[in-house]
Picture 1 (cartoon, rainbow, N blue to C red):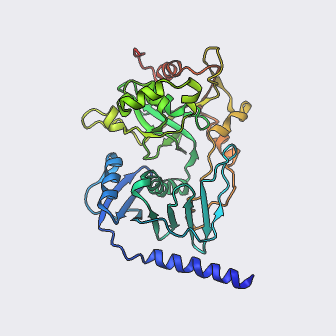
Picture 2: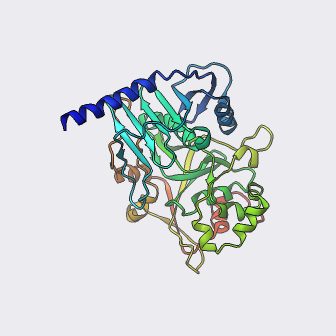
Picture 3: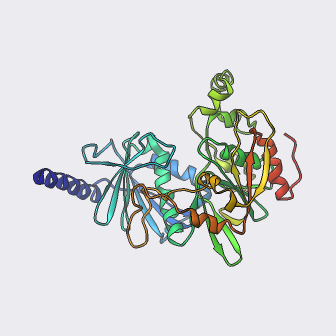
Length: 378
């Protein structure tokens, strides 16, 4: 047994040594001013860098910069399948295997179960290796994780929500996966004065008398039902896709997991106005507790979150396997977020619970009224 353990440790050490000294040159670079941190990204392939530049266009910096973090992206066949990966325990309600990991003295290796992408996270090196061009979304997430780490190290609390803003006032919409938060947020953007802040992650921090909200540089990633029911987004579907989705039953379409990226500047921007705002004071948070099978009208009630704590898990979010504290320690496996931290931050914030049937237009109009915006025609 001791010999087997020694052999395993040797395999891990050899792989890490090879990865940290990977011979392929990273000739293609971009610099990003992300919410929370600046990140330099060095790629081995021009295609990867070009795709990342197109995606992160609103956050691109020109010229060489001294960035907070550097990420190396190496296009490669899958690697390190043979290593003794441990399973990362997912949050309650999610059962499919997603991430595996190996903890080292001062670093963590992570491997995505579905794609075979491998990531090295440490204070000094951050490397993504594998079929990157085929799995660009995972590379984007890894890049964003560096800024998300900085935010949390600086005292920002992570949340699972989408957010939009008007006149420097943000409204966050939280709900469990598949609950309609991205669709709801995109409906708020029907008004030309409303800006996108974040799709799936928010960060909040008390600064003086204000609770500030910061988003992540991640475009909305939505299912076909959202596209089909929003005229502005229908051009993302081919005629064949549109016909196929229109023949599906509503429940089948709601549950369908086929993701599409909604590039906000391209679909909502006007000239130099990208319709993106990274940070704004939090005006209100909306907790989705509706049910698409309910036949009654949507109901929106202002609540005392201390009396409705059962709704908070929709907002609470683990920092995840990529989170590394400033002292180098990593997020432990299966560590759940602390309820009290969320209660404290929301103690002086307007909180609304949405129940009854699903009506995106009713929720949109309610949020517009909170902002004192005029209603728009569907």
